[in-house]
Length: 407
Image (cartoon, rainbow, N blue to C red; front, side, top):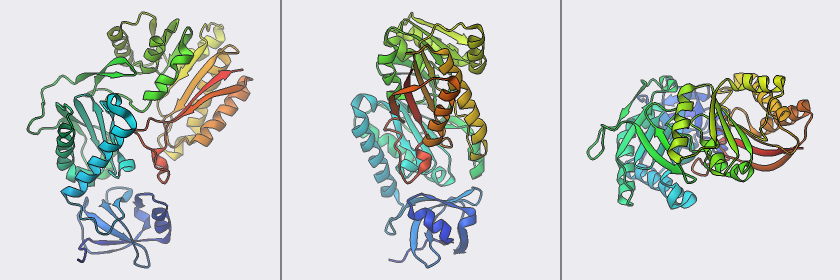
């Protein structure tokens, strides 16, 4: 049966890009269009020699002109197609996360699950959805309702779905920003926006309405667990603590003292509430600029900590700012290395895919050289498996996490 999708032809450069398995076609890679379309429609992509390359959502408003969602010319893109994808994503998380961690994990991770521009996080009985592409926006109603149906069919309790579409990048797709409860039969819309989760045995109050991104950073789950054996009995300085996740894991590991630092008073208040929720009494909270605090500690020679954790926000969100980000990462790491005693420990990370691992490692080498220390590597880690890395899509490989001893 002949396909009736509009044909989009691309340059050899675009063809080469798609052959690597990457799902994006950029506007400058399109040479011709055979047929008509509306933004958000599915089109077929062809090479200059009329070879089928894949099918995806087209949007003239976006720099990413076509987002490939299938390379199978027989796919029909009906409800059965999207349901298969949803079931694949859920089955994968059940396998790699296990029953307990499946309760709080990322259920759909955009391109890594062939749902370009879609993020779905689960916090026990709450699903939080973020839609960043027009194509997904047009089919989101089916995706959301089917996702809830499949989870409930498998015995999971889902009370509400909240949309966190309050991000500026939606405007690049011609979409409006908004947030709110998703309204559908059987879903609540009158909740207060706070839900309690348990991760690594620690309780957290997650604010999925006003918290950053979808309300909680799930990708560091096992990295937070990894610092426990180092933290036991030590004095720990957790920089950029946000809602206190690394600090709480250190406290749970019976650190002698944990100081949680963040420039945001709201974040610190959340961290303190989480500490109280768990009954930890070995924590203190400091509102400060981490760069200034580390400088002050070095100048006054007042640093009693033998374990420093650096979990900063992404210093770069584009290739244009990588150099300045490099300097920022180097500065905080060098200062931490200088402050720590010989034999002390450092956990450090970057969550930006624009700072690739090779460059991050170079930064650490430069920082150690300037600090006149050597780094003994204990662990090298990445994001948890519910944020899967596709080797043919570099953008999915973003989190670098290292633990060192200073020698």
